[in-house]
Length: 463
Ligand code: BES
Ligand code: MN
Ligand code: MN
Image 1 (cartoon, protein in one colour):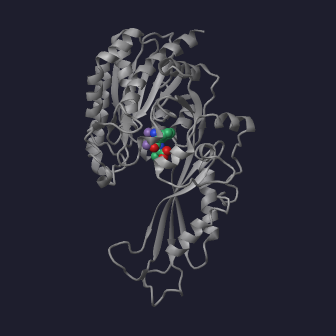
Image 2: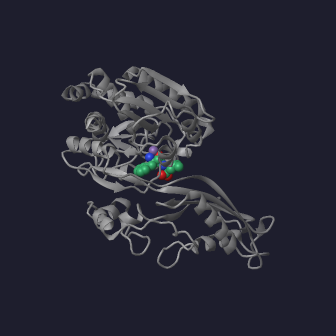
Image 3: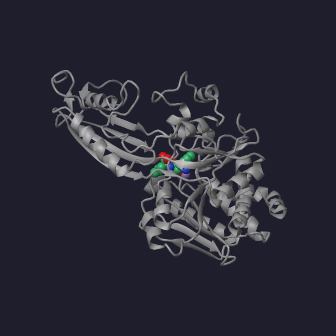
């Protein structure tokens, strides 16, 4: 193992250069203008897996962007680890808020990351984290220390809801067979407080359209006499919360599994500094559901958020107009055992019901995903815990995250494998935002920790 560590040390500069090359390709899956770049990124990932020592590496076509698959089988009796990650990234806009261009990676120091951070779209989510697995794999292959069989499944549509991956895993169950899915696409508490993600929230995402009069109207001639769809939409959205910030959709909380007092007390032990949190976001106070702490609100409680709202005149100056239509995109983060289809249905029924006669409402569901929780009393989790304890010198804390990786619940359902969410990002990495970055420390800590996972997992499975 110390050989592996030495190999990583000796190849640090190249490991950074190789990541930079990947970060330079704008693989924005949401925007078809970037199609060629996104396909090129898949090729680059495939090549990096061949260079690292994969026996097989291939581009697997799907109805959308391809899945990069690779494997190295070392011993039919050894356990098989399936690595999942994604090579696509979020759109980079608004571009003018980036200090340096999103696809020209640069290392700069930050307050939290004094050793420097790689600034680029995808630096953390997920190219940087996914690539740690490619480099850790290389280090294990080159030092003859890979104790498990390994398979890679790197997709290009995670940021748009993984529309093709479900079909891919259903059609390739044998090819993807293994013992555990290992993912680095989440975060940890802090660089001196390692943690492992044991839960992800589910997601239900809907778009609503409110239509008033059949055309835009003069707001003087008609104002006050007809329903203004923008006014109405705002009123309807506001009514989705009561005075305690509970969501008012009937049945919304029916399937929520409440945590026991013991579980909540254990959660509250994770270090968290509310003042630092507020300072980091430049807010005077936090805001949310009554009766829950900030960390509970963003992990074990379901939420509803407007992600975008538009309609009417938003150009320069003033135009006196009542728009014919108003729109909003609304996400609901779900917790076990809420079902996204059921929640979208409840939302649609309620939203249609609360609309006044004077408007028409259309609700269109977008992608969704089931929530996920993983047990900690398994060899799969314990291997991750031991690996992080060895590399950080501290036992990692199990924590539930507020984010979503919808495909994780499907891996369990379709492939019968649990996922281990051993992520090395920080909440402050600004994923999906301008100036996304990933600590140089975190990148190398990940590359160093991953081989330890394989070592401990192989040992634990030997019994
Ligand atoms: N890697 C993130 C999810 C994440 C980040 C989970 C940090 C936990 C901690 C993933 O790429 C993502 O952005 N997921 C989307 C859902 C998807 C359907 C677009 C999300 O959570 O909004
Ligand atoms: Mn991600
Ligand atoms: Mn993401």
